[in-house]
Image 1 (spheres, rainbow, N blue to C red):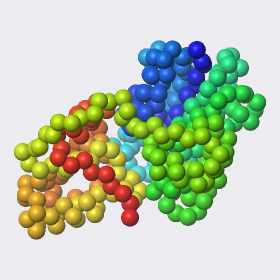
Image 2 (cartoon, rainbow, N blue to C red; image 1 turned 90 degrees about the vertical axis):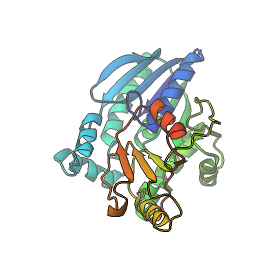
Image 3 (cartoon, rainbow, N blue to C red; image 1 turned 135 degrees about the vertical axis):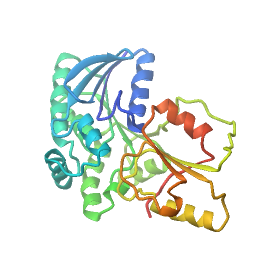
Length: 305
């Protein structure tokens, strides 16, 4: 049996793909007979248990989960806390940096109480990985698994050159020092290999713990679906434009439907398709899987130009 420490901003009960990935890691590592401790973001500092795993929630004192969710839902763009977070994001490209310091202090304390064989850090691009790196720098010995999940310096969010270059510095640092690097797809890992060839790499896709679906469920009205948030250059504008053209040219029925599930960002829907587009609030992950396999004909992924 090994002692495993997982450091992630996202974890249960947050309703996001990043959370479900770490939930699955924690659950299955625990089911394999190992001891699992998770440090994650919470609305308050609290120690608890989840599926046999010890969980330490660390509050982000700049911007808590519920505070941010409430402000986005109410379309509140600027508040003192959001201005502070925005400044941190522009200076350090990660408004979670102060939270990351608190996470490191918590992890360092746990290391003094227990010996951890493995540390798995994941996502959000700097803070959790930086906490793991700092644990190495203060002398703790462990096998470090860096779950990069998505690309960092090539992520659309960091499309500006100065952002990309800044993040790439950290990216190379993590790739160099981690014992194993994970990501959701082989092409992303291939890019990481170009940055640092000597690390060990492993593809672990999202959704691996769900059964494959082979049934075809055609809808009575042609339905396109998008599940998740829009952000930065990931916007529906071109999709809406193409959808409008397809209807006007008679290439898809006039009563075709677009379902957008779980997006809190404000979007502009063209007047001519306002009755074709339905916005649905976030749903639990199992329900999102069910909708994607039974209630839409096409599941859309938007790629920035």
